[in-house]
Image 1: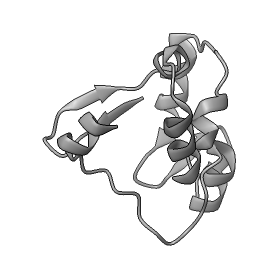
Image 2: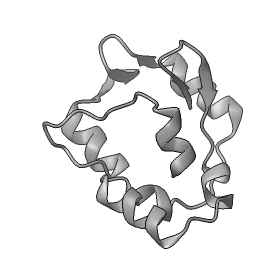
Image 3: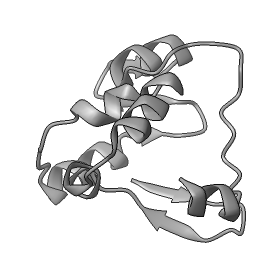
Image 4: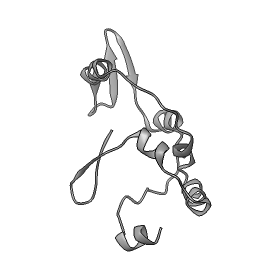
Length: 105
């Protein structure tokens, strides 16, 4: 998964990187309090590149749907939140980076 930051740079996300990190109790508490505790329980998995390409060829991000033959899966917010384990609230996630706060963390 690729994520853009506020500077427009693209960063690569990897489950393996998260699993390798050793968090302090305070850090684990902060992660859970922020509603992202599911990240701590992600298991290792591997998806073949050909499968990912096939899925992407049948996915329309503008319509938020996956189409194959006559079947359609629409990715609406509650479904995505349920699958990924996100809390479905009204408070937006702050993606900005405060470097001083990161250093303190």
